[in-house]
Length: 268
Image (cartoon, rainbow, N blue to C red):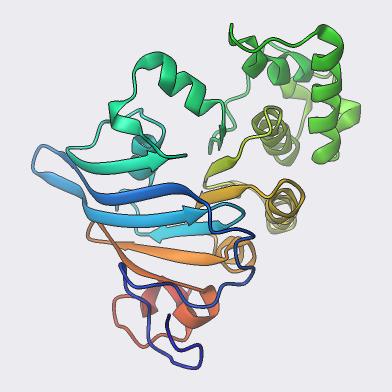
């Protein structure tokens, strides 16, 4: 493990430094090994490696177009990598059939940058939608309880019968997060969770991310350009450069790094 008094950046493949809140277990929930993904001549991910533990938040930081969204799509099986392995709960995602992939995704929450709410549905209907998988068997009473619990987690129980158009941008983001929470996922993938929000509302979403981690012991990968989110929500920060996990360390240690490739990210 890196010397906690050292100023050196921890490079991919080396054990991470001291985290803000160390994972509550050493259970690996996502293990990405030697991942490659290209689109024609555009090499997006090149020998990318990363391990996420239960109860840990890792923020993925990189320039626009560096492959952050491609990484998430590979993790949930929307894109097939050219090479490498992605183990989620011990299962190699690229090898899973459609049914096994669907079951796995039920354990993974995903908060889209656009919220992806159905405008023609009430808040209640939006939250019930993930429960419609044919193999999820719950009574209507259980569904009602799950909906209300998820809304209470984000402080919006009073919106249950409202339409998305009646909600502010911050409220819509919270409802999308509530829909993500309804299946009690073990992992949550956040795609720019504070984009388009004012600083106060963005801070509220960041606080929710941390509260959810603490309440449910979730593990999260968070894509964000918001340095406030990077600072407050991360246990570790993975810096994605030229397709690789170039550096992996705490926000504070990376911020004080003298590495010319890392330093510009923290000079905003």
